[in-house]
Image (tube, rainbow, N blue to C red; front, side):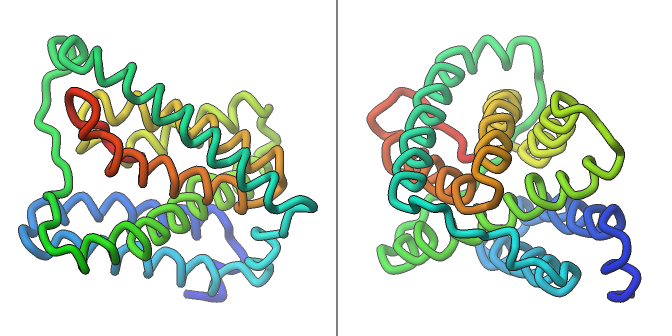
Length: 218
């Protein structure tokens, strides 16, 4: 099985997508939602490193890591601000797209919250960028698709992952997917998009109390 996946990036992508989409069931797991989420993402990360012999090449250090990191954080802040704009129109979106949406419950314990907003969000950023940027690009490039289709397809499957968050989450995630793919292709690796992904989620959790209505993470 592993040998087959190593020779077939498309099959590896499908397995990763199945694991990610199966994670929807965690929203029915009550208090187990966070442990299941962590496990799901660890499985995806393990699959990535086991199935891609050149997995380390996905993290080439940029020539100016501090500059690239600051650019990624700035872009994360812009994504957060754009999510606020979408949040303002959330009620309008719900009028046209009516379906139940789910989210993660608030964490009361300080030590657990610190763990989730550090290790937990790193797992989120790593696993999703490995799947929806690096692995997706490896597959789509083999199909000789134009860049516009690589951006659109990867952002679409990334947005579908966030369907349980409702229409707002889908729209925000699609937009974020386009921006994160640009960072991946611009800096030739996962360094920048992982940093941007981590910080936009961190901002979504810590800055959203200052704005009316929840801002879903990507």
